Amino acid sequence: MPINNSGPVSLGGSTTGQSINLELGLSATAQISMNDAVVRTLLGRASGSISLNDAYGKSNLGTPLGVSAYPPNYESYNNLTVAWSLPASSFGASVQVYVNGSLYTTTGVNAVGASITGLTANTSYSIYVRAIRNGALSAPSATVTGTTRPCYAYYQLIDSYCDQYNSLIEVRGSGSCGTVYYNDTGNNVEVCGYIPAGTFLGSYCSGQFVVGTYANGSGGTYSQNLDACGGTIYIGYFNPYNGPSTCCNGNCVAPAGHLISEGCTVYNSPPYTYTYTYTDGCGGITTTNYNNDSRCGYTGGGGGGGGCIPSGGYDDTLYQTDCCSGAAVPGSTVCDNPADYGTTWATCYHVCA
Image (cartoon, rainbow, N blue to C red; front, side):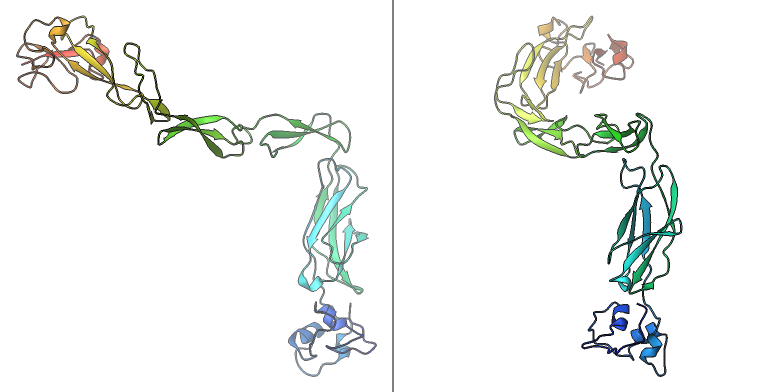
């Protein structure tokens, strides 16, 4: 309160003078003794005799903590919100709010905030608070500075943030004190970091299903089935495949080994290669080549659809050698397309040793 030294006071049970219990943050009828350590600490009597007279003027009232002062919103240019927390020893206390050294208001019991109105725009104020209970005041809190917002010019940028739809919102002045303009820029990728909901991100296989992945607009994804592979699929130009398909790399494709085309590879010179082109089972192709093939006009012997090539014959440089000797004449490699040399070897051939 501080504690009163008049009137009967009992510690515990019914009481008319409840000062000590209240200062200790206890209920009015709590059972305590004058010799309890908390009572001696409050009364400043660590040892020796103790009486109610020792309690006169003593208080256990804690100082409010964590004081802050800030404009309550973008539109507020002439008021501040003040907030604080109360320690347990200040339970049951009201709080006095001081602005620039003068008492502005006294709150209700156990309040943890107050509004200060009627201030000047774009002005700083010194603010502190004190707890008060039964006439006793706590020590002043730390002093903080609160600054009111200015009156903004028309379309002056005040702030920006991402709303619940992940769109960038700009807060701009309206040219009048106390009102602002919220500008939705529609930018929800570069600044807010989210891809718009429904954006296709890719696909993958789940068994025979092609599954699409989409952005959900809040940083996550969702999936849905796009196709159930197994039906007819058309591929190629010369011999299209129209049988059951399978799933690979997020697409329905023909299974491996389906012949797409066959025929002589057109070179400007030997080795008269006959090429089979097949599906590779994942949307691409693979080829098998037969060099010096009579089906492509080769008359030098060997070949004929895959036999070994005798000495002096021409063999491609792809995959393994078809030379009967198993080797080529050193330095005999020639490429119709010089860029293939040492890279793809697609148009290159050599003379069998």
